[in-house]
Length: 548
Image: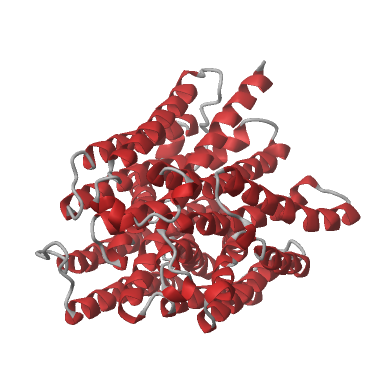
């Protein structure tokens, strides 16, 4: 009976992972809709990612801060199950806030867009709690030796959510794929496309959040997820993170101030555009410089710095920041890129299959990377490393085809999948070489995309999803190596760096506003370059085991 209950809980838990992927990827379509509906520039539309991913950082930071003050692990005190429940309820509250935020909102109503951002921030705060609790909770739902299998299953479902999200959100907003040639601006002007459809979406999502919370709360036989673990404080690290946060708040206050007082349809002056660019670069410098300075100070005196005393952890925090930033930025700016004449002048609905394929690339890579978990024989593993990626590719194509989208133009992506397979064979399941190879492949792909236009450039940029796919676990493995008792704290610091999804996409968006969206992808090339450098430098200087 216990096994059946745990299977039920695992099914419920995987739906939570699906929500994360569905909402995160769906935002890429939603921001294109908001850009037209609220008459936003590219930077403003990227504030959707800023609010959503910024909430992850704030939520994780608050949890660490309150735990430090209480000198106990608050999540452990609540229990992992309750942590998931609280997170789901908070996200449901955010969904309800979204429904209220768009009620009666008219096109061009920038004040309503502010409430949309606030609602997404609340949803993101809930996701932060869920993510902190859900991964270790999956380990409790069965035998310890099969825990990695459950985490892999959950990760695969998350990737499925990122693949389906853009398709479903597009169909909800625009009706059917048959309407792929609609003019979003004309439909809004004619009153055929309103925010009422957004309300329907979030009514369904909010209801699912509450249903999942109820299943967890009323399943009394499930483990509470509490453990007797020692909490390690880090006052100096907390002070550093709070300082970074306050500086970011100040910087982005002045960023948003540039938009205050603008009338409908009124554009920023050239001076304001440049001010926002420099302020955004300043925000990036605050994060990078703040963490590096913290580690330099920790080298002089380790007391009070906790996990930040380890260079591999700090460099890993920057790697997670960069990885999440580039993963989100490629696709969140993709819509604006594909609307350019050199890239097909596509409508918002036509863009959906491309965004789905980008996120599908992450699913392809994660399914492939999971093969080793099941310990197949050497021969069978080689066969699966070729078959599984193309099976996953077929799933992505099938989902788009069933949804009514044309998929013939996506077949070329099979070449990109072949390149990724070669990367897996060279990496040999080792985090450092695999991350370095995929980082280099990412640089090459972005460079090809920058130097070309049309289909070649599009698929070069889309392949970024393939190369991002294995980066999260690889970065974690390299960053936490040798941390000992600070491993759990280091993991929490790494999760905070999901902040990259809030900083890098708007920065690229503003660069796109100034020099053009195509050229703005230089940001993504630089991100991949750092990730390759991180894999090289950490493996060379800081790893305690050369097996990594």
